[in-house]
Length: 291
Image 1 (cartoon, rainbow, N blue to C red):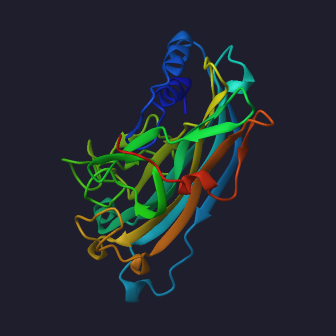
Image 2 (cartoon, rainbow, N blue to C red):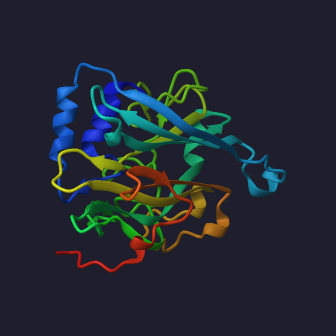
């Protein structure tokens, strides 16, 4: 991951189709000011989860599925000359599929489930903290708050596959490298450009949007409290279209699932970002969206 990609991620507040209601102009300015310098990247943790070997693959008809794994990295990014208080916390995720031959890749599909929220928090002069929902994403064709108390399918349109792209193919957002062991997302090939010469593809996600915002009147932070579960299915067990709750998607038919998260919340009392084990209680608060 190079510094140009990270600057782009920070300035756009990356999450699939997320748009901030209040655009953080200060972040865009910081990105442009440091356009020629490298960002500092610190890996906080790395977790690789591998699908267990399928003993009855012949009975299930999945023997051509050689391996599946996920790689989850938590990273802290600081732009040059920026105070450490304004570092951005990110989760860099890969879902990697290996089939015996490239032609077998479309036999399988990945559906991602999501719950939790994103929100801003502001430390008021009286010492109280005010939280508010301030981010939306395109979810099944509609812009909605990033606020889901229950599990929903994470898709911007009717196709539940996380690799699909509206108006294009169902697998077009897969990436691949000439070296099948490489998970370099920045220089990878897109599946919609060409199919790989081997059976290994991966879906990558980079979630940021966490940390103290520079230049606000009162200390204000971006917070993320999200849990995801990414599951691989036989494509024949998945509908071509669904809705947010997952009509037609039978989770019991998943071949394998891997859980991951992005839960970083700014602690205004102690002036630091903290990783949490559970979803923040504010995610269950009501909202008046749409305005």
